[in-house]
Length: 202
Picture 1 (cartoon, rainbow, N blue to C red):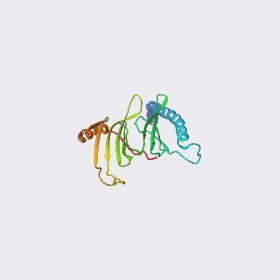
Picture 2 (picture 1 turned 180 degrees about the horizontal axis):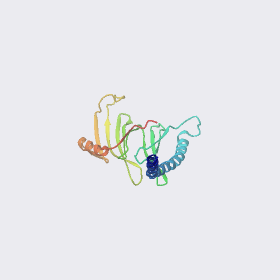
Picture 3 (picture 1 turned 135 degrees about the horizontal axis):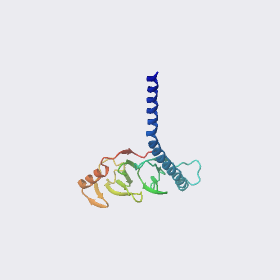
Picture 4 (picture 1 turned 90 degrees about the horizontal axis):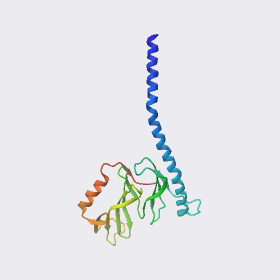
């Protein structure tokens, strides 16, 4: 009988200890969830404004959107896809009590998010015989993305489908022309060891 009581005490102690060590963890999760919930509330206000801007008063017209953590800070961003040439996709970020338009792309789409490094890759943005591949890097102070490297690809005038290799390729690093080797080295460093989120299809 004594052994049975001792055994039950041990079980009770283990159960209590398990609960106690979980409390700090649960508190942290709640804090993150609460902050994310606030971000969603504010971003939905922005979504409403953007729908008004791009869709007007058309009730049946929808603005495709999604909430995704594309910069790895555990707080979702708002992605919208108006689909216009001048504004194909956009990202809105909520930080420090305000919403900012973090990045936009026209004539293209956000192809890859390097979430850990806060980098966005845009593949084949453009038209009329010239396509661009961009790398955007987030500014930690403004939370906005800025183009830090890109490739300009010029195609033959009769190659409307971009089926052939470009006739001219120019590499840029921070708006300065560089060699392919220098560009490749810089881009490799931008992406190094980062977690990846493919595409922004909504």
